[in-house]
Length: 167
Image (cartoon, rainbow, N blue to C red):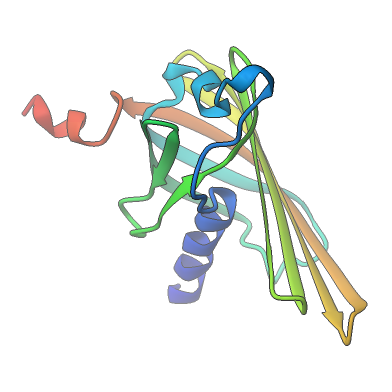
């Protein structure tokens, strides 16, 4: 169980990797400014694995609480249950959709993760895809991947503090 919770925390961090600033779109408009306001707030997120090359490596499902907030050009995702928190890079955004991508690695292992979320009122759906490439002496050894379907339900307001402010 502890291993599973650790994996979920790592998955959350991979999905919403840390950045030092926002990505800029053409015309000098920050990508974070294009994220629909409806995405900000507290969400119950259900992730269900749909495709994988390694069932032992990737959890079949998870249920988490996410809080998405924004300060200036930085969007932060916090999971109050696991304690995970990360600034996220917006790769693309439209009136109801936004996409994140994160690539991490140390040369021996590279993880590329892409999450696409689609807003529909007080819900969002989407997908999260992760590809883990392992190399030895610069040569590819194996590639593992997973795709999760995401469904989220808005719990409250623009951040978790708004849940408790009405009490």
